[in-house]
Length: 455
Image (cartoon, rainbow, N blue to C red; front, side):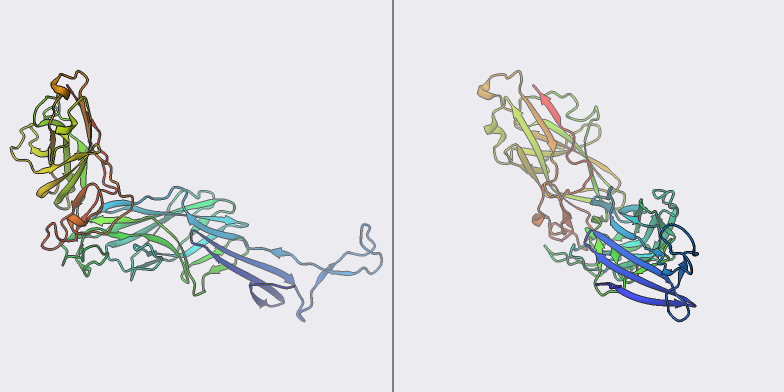
């Protein structure tokens, strides 16, 4: 019997020899763990023992003393495959101090036999280069998994671990993976609160200040990312329930299964159309004037800290109006108003309308206090075409969707790529020049619901 590209071991237990064959295959998104055990009955001299046909029988056996035919009962271990879940956790942003945050899902499939997984690891790969990175933002990791082959989607097994130098290992697991079925796993994280950063990160890089944990808080600049990938390495261990083959990774090479990225901020904004009856836009009536209210916006800051605003991008579509007036330099203006509808007298931000978009820049950083909501009204010049009344004239406005589709490293306000620029104000001596600004990727409420104001 020949074996090619496989490990072979003979285990002698009394008069029994067991030949174990184990093969490993690791892929970027699929980890195959395969073993095989061939059991041959032998005598104490190492000679194969068989069974007699009993002599004198019919069928294919010979009469008389008969012949001895060695028997080779075979027990073959199955294949255990890990992959990304069919219902993965998407990229997201979350405020520091959050608990029970779902950050990843993986799944495992048994073929040929059921398996018990007893140990596995995850590692942080926030730079997306399949290298492990130290990250202290995650306080505790919790793995939930099934403990019964008959209920592979019931995650009643719980194990906890902590990241150490970017890696966390879950031990003494009783995770059951059914034969021919798929077992789901979920990974949750509890986060430290984010206190004021010790210093500013360098602009346009991922470089962050030293992380300092103090009590239940950590001093970092917001935007720190975690990506907790399934890590197939020497810590992995599983046992085939029929073959009893122990599967472990002992090679130098490793493979992983990518999770999605979670960015952590001290505080997070929320955007929504203000639908209150007291808002300046409540009537829905468009009035021809040099500054007509066309959109009312409510912005909130989570309870962890203040939120700073630098730029907002409004999508504005006009019908039956003089576009020359609308597209004049800095003709689009943003004012703050109170919850009772009283509008301030000073424009806080201005921008120019072009290609149905107005990017407005705040003259000075606008701050929304933690746990509060502030209100803003967008005003534009409304001039009728040719000076005549347009019965169907209208302006439809909303705060636009973010143009960026991946997490970006925090940088200074004017260096951020994106349509809506905000800050969690986590850098020490925060300003528009410190590197704690980002875009609206994964911010809740974008794009906002549109408002159509009509003549």
